[in-house]
Length: 353
Image (tube, rainbow, N blue to C red):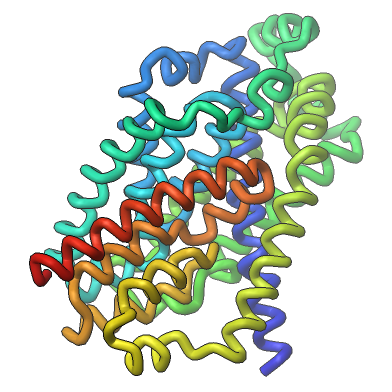
C-alpha cells in the first residue's frame, strides 16, 4: 500500500512538473523569437485576456490552468485573467462529469464561464496589488537574440547542435523524450480516469504530445545562446526545482491527510454542512478529493449548488505551481473564489437547487 501510494505521488508529481515546464519552454520560445510581440496582443486588451483565460480554463483537465499560471507569472495576462481561468475550470473531474451527466455538466460549465468573466472583470477593478513575479526581468530579450533570429533565417544546423551537443541540450532532449514516451505508453496517465471511454483524458494526450514534440524540435534547432540563456537559464533553473518540490510536498501532505480523513463519510454524516465541506475540500490543490461531490451528485444525493460551490473553489493541480511562484496571487485568487462559492451555496439553499 505504501509502495503504491509512493509511486502514485511520484507519477503525479512528474506529470504536473512535465506539463508546466513544457508550457513554460514553449511560452519562452514564442516570446523571445517574436521579440515579445507574439503574445503582446494579450497585454493590450483586458477583455481579450479574460476571454482567452476563461477558454483555457474550460479545457478539461489541468493543462489550461497550467498555461494560464505560466502566462500570469510572466506578466502576459493580469490577475483578473488568472481568476477567470481558475473559476471557469472544472479540473480533472470534468471527464467524469461529462461521462456521467453530460447535460448538467454543460450547464455547470456555462454557469462557471459567466461567473469567471464577471469575477475576472471585478478582480481587475478591485484588486491592484498582485504583481506578476517575473513580469519585468524574466522573459528578457537579449542583444544576442537578434543574432539568433538571423541565424534562424539563414538556417540553423540541427545536425551541428546534435554533433556537438551540450550537457543542457542533452538533458532537455532526454526530459522531453521521456515525457513523450511516458505519455504514449500511458505511464503518466491518471489511473482514475481510465474507466471513462468517451471523455477519457487520453484524447488530451494528443495535445500534450503535439506541444512536447514542438518543444523537442525547438530544443534541437535553437542556437547555444538561446538554449543556455532562455530555455535553461530562464525556465529550468528558475522553475524546475521549485515546481517539482512544491508539487511533491503538496501531494505528500494530501496523501497523509487522506489516510486519516474520509471526506465522503464526513459529508454524508453532516448534511447541513455540505456547502461548507464543499468549499473547504475545494481548497485542496489537487484533483481527486473533489470527486466525492461529483459522485454524490451523479447518484442524486447532492444538490447542484453544492457541486457548483466545490467546482468554483477547486482548481485541481493548477494551483500548486501558482502557490510556488506567487503566494499572494494564490491566496487572493482563493479568497475571491471562496466568496463566489459561498454566494452560490447561499443562493442554492435559498432557491432550493
